[in-house]
Each structure stands twice: as structure tokens, then as C-alpha cells.
Length: 165
Image 1 (cartoon, one colour):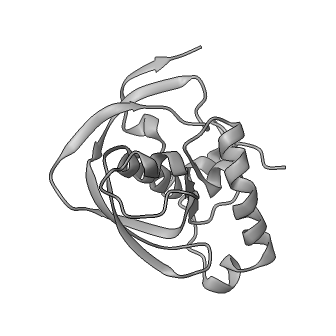
Image 2 (cartoon, helix red, strand yellow; image 1 turned 30 degrees about the horizontal axis):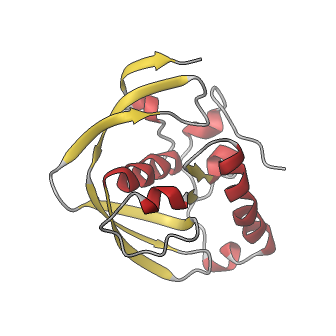
């Protein structure tokens, strides 16, 4: 059973390691991918990065609800999106500021400035290369999860940080 790693665990501040296809396709990592989605949902998350469950590898899951909110996106929205070794680049100067929280920083929210339009490159869970555009909230979730893979937490970028009950 996966457990959410929370601050002050120093593992959350480490840059995660890229993984190769053989390791990605190993039973251990395929099982991890299968177990991450339910953990994300039972924890009320919209995304989950492997470091948040104790694996410092460049793997994250983006909930299908985030995909559904991006009306410009052409990706199938029936399933969660698995991103392995993801990178992103901004595709416009447009940014937005919105409230974020994090499963690994419980009880805290803050306003974070993010790019509104990005292009993402990664592998999927089968080790196939994928490339797509993401906008607004969908782009925000991806940037938040990729930050986790770089050892960055939303509180490092947030303004107006508040405690919530």
C-alpha cells in the first residue's frame, strides 16, 4: 500500500532520476503505476508524482479530470495520463496565477504563477514517446508534478500562503 510522503521528508527535495525503458517496463514499476492512480484519488489529488509515494524516479500521473478541463486538448480523457521522464516548454508568454495545494504539504495553500500554454514531451507507461500541448489548468497540473520531479514544491513559488483546516 502506497503512502503519501509529506514535508519535512528530505526525499521531496531531491531531483528524481530518469528511468530507462527496461526499468519502466519492469513488474515493479508497472505495479507502481497501477497503484498510483487509486492512491491519487483516495487522497483527493488531481496529480501524483512518484517522489510523493517514495520513489525518486521521473514518473507522474495526471488525473483525467485535469485533461477534461482543457477544451483545446486532443488526448483521450477516459484514462489518467502517465508521464515518464517528462519535459515541458512554454509556447506563449501568457501566464496565470491560481491557488494550489499539495498532498505532500497538507493544510497549506498558496497562489502560484504558472505558464498557461505548454508543450510536453514524455514517454507513456509503455515507453512510447508522446508529445502534446496543454493549456490552463491542465498545464498547471503538469508543471506542478514536474516540479516534484525536480525537488521543487509549490510553496517554493507560492505567494499568499495560508493554512487551511
